[in-house]
Amino acid sequence: MSQDPYEILGVSRDAEADEIKKAYRRLARQLHPDVNPDPETQERFKEVSAAYEVLADPEKRRMYDLGGDPFGRGGAGAGQGAGFSFTDIMDAFFGGQAGGAGQGRGPRPRSRRGQDALVRLEVDLAEAAFGVSRELKVDTAVLCTVCEGSGAAQGSTPVTCETCHGRGEVQQVQRSFLGEVRTLRACPACRGFGEIIPEPCRECSGDGRVRSRRTLTVKIPPGVDTGTRVQLAGEGETGPGGGPAGDLYVEIQVAPHEVFSRDGTDLRCHVTVPMTAAALGTTIKMPLLEADVAEADSEMDLWVDVEVRPGTQSGQEQVLRGRGIPHLRSQVRGDLVITIDVETPARLDDRQTELLQELARLRHEESPDGRIQQPHKGMFGRLRDAFHPR
Image (cartoon, rainbow, N blue to C red):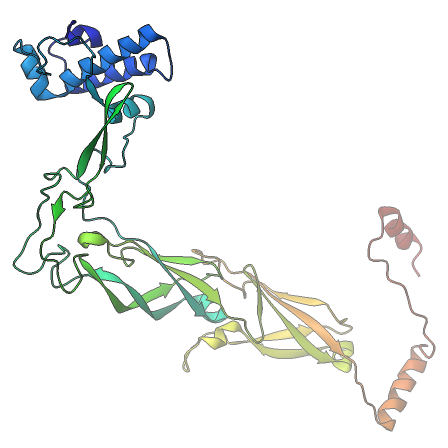
């Protein structure tokens, strides 16, 4: 080399490997032909690349420090045919690694975390409201009990790959106008692991895990709704090579109820009463949602009295506070909203017709005029009705 590689990179003779690499990255970003195509800059870039090749290789650096020629060319000019690593150039620009080798320039671990799993579970509305424990059958990858995750048959062990000598990557050299470009790729023999299993386990075929159907108990908390996911940590797929298992997510699907419908944390239902009961008023007894999950000897309130006030109109609502769905992770409950539907008789006998006609005469409703409803009155309209009632 015609110049001192330490001077070319601007580092001291006792510089550490990280300091040398940082200096090279800084210069490569400034001098790379894609950034600065000037011929003199290209020559300077070749010198920098050749200097880095010497100082980045411990053996070549030791040879240069002892006064020898690390390239063995007997004084060839700097940069003339010198090789450099394409991965180092990519590091200079992107801080990464070219060629697709394992991240970190070394064998990738055979043991890795497993994937998460997702199953769907249908529950009743009452179970979703008050919580339930259910048994769930899942089919996932579990640890192979024969090889205990190693992937090797009993009595055998993985051996170092002869192709990459345990590095997990191989080097490919190509010639370009910049010189010899070396790229690193995952070793095709060991797939980047650095080891080969000569005798794979017959139970798992060397993967370290097998498929198995298991039964798990999942606790559904009160207040869940359709789409809520319950996480079971470590109950997902076991990782390759006996790696830690991922998580299992149980997605809830709430089945429709024959009486109640859900509106957030509120419950809604419709109760039909006869026309006479709506006019005169009555009290009806109706079951609560708790009746679906209560035990035979339960002391829970399973029924509630609903008061229908005299003159109740069809569509009016009765709200029972705190009788709805519990908030998730809270003891606070929503409301039960009961809509009253007034049923008009479709068939009347003579006596019933006579009584209704008499009632109509008493109320002066023999020939009633229909009133057009005005659901959206303005402020002035409401004031007019207040001072001029019908």
